[in-house]
Image (cartoon, rainbow, N blue to C red; front, side, top):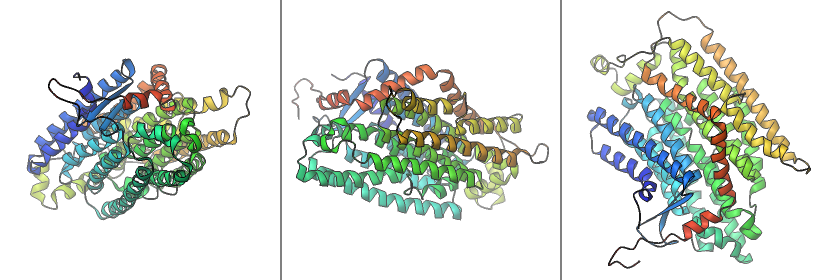
Length: 539
């Protein structure tokens, strides 16, 4: 019999679905009501995500939920382990920060922002929690459909052009996704991930080429979404043109592709996969390192802060893909730490960029956003009253300190969490060799991480000098508390990760160990049985 705790697994999907659908029934004239619903649902999602993390770490390392009450592998099953719960919590925290920032003005810059925001959360959480490939495709499409609307949110020719390119590329990626899933199902006869892990070693040699072709096509879809070079050309224009809160949420969308690679590589093509063990590992290694190099060069060449942040996303994604290709549990633990730290940092940086730009041309963003939301009607501009609210004292100091912290985190300098994450990824490669020679891949990874950190430090220093070492009118900058608070909160969480690096790394090590020894995951999912009630037979 299922307990109330078991139903926590469905709540990260059900809650944003209900909230998003309910807000679609409300006209945009009731925007304050929509905002209240969105805030309440997002905060409740944070609470649910914390409960999932505690449950996964304390007593239920792999919890399952069979939707429709059908037996596995026929059931649509949700699976919450340490890694999935961590990603749901990261999504909820980032969403809370981005939404808080959006309430200052950006939520009024276009229609249906709040509904699209919740539907994006539904798709993200579903992708992290699903236990089969087809429903991974379904949740991908949900989050992409919501992201299309959010990418275009706020209008403007540059944003529309970039958004249309983003839509076109992701439609192609979705086509590859569907083709890959179809090929795998045709060979294996199942799309349940745990069931696939058991069947792949038993695939006949005559069919193994078709299976690996399907996996390769599926990998292309994942790697397009993870923005691996040269498949990530769409990212720069889209992320740099998106509104600040939307770009902050997009910081986790490339991590969905990286998460799937981290999840599926050891589960489906690990040591127990027979002849398919390690499939695509060398290609993933080369692609991940090339992405780091391309991102690092782009960071140095970026002439604007939004593009600098977009290139930083590429560096982050490349680092995670390279760590996944290495295939070591200790490296994966450091990669999970890095995933959380880099996502929070880049999300905060995207929010901070708009505040920095406002300081350079005071009032420019306010006029632009207001015109997008209300047109040129002066009466509407007066009614909007975007300037009301509590302003933050000493805005230049607050923004400057936050910018400096972002720079240190992106560069991976000690003692902050960015450094801890890189050290945690590299130390197993050089300290745990037991006399074995250190591979060339490890040295390349070390060099690329150092150079990417150096490029971030140089670029952030140059951008900071350009933004803060200029003369400006006294009192020209007005920053509201609701705008600076989420930036400070996200960066403060990185500080907390630094202080609590020991407990945090223990959680990441447990999560990575379960990824690379997926026996418990497979056994728990395949043992999921329908709940039988009195007088009811099992379907």
